[in-house]
Image (cartoon, rainbow, N blue to C red; front, side):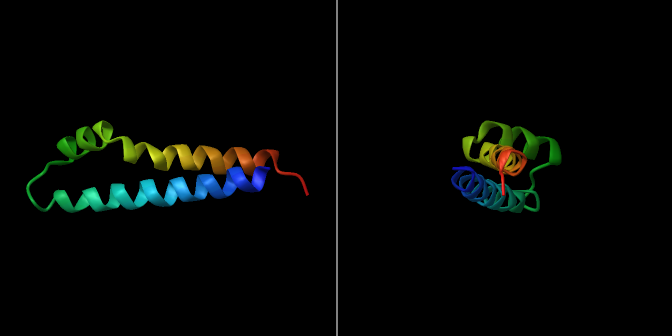
Length: 65
């Protein structure tokens, strides 16, 4: 059970981190850091990274040998 939560969290973290890093490419195009932070707050897919980290942490804490 916890392996599924762990792997789901890993997938969410990879997807969310990749999208967030992709949006970093907008900074050289003229976006300021403040505008970048506002942008990633409005994008739902950027919330996958912290959700994935939460899933991974929960699975590691409750996983038994």
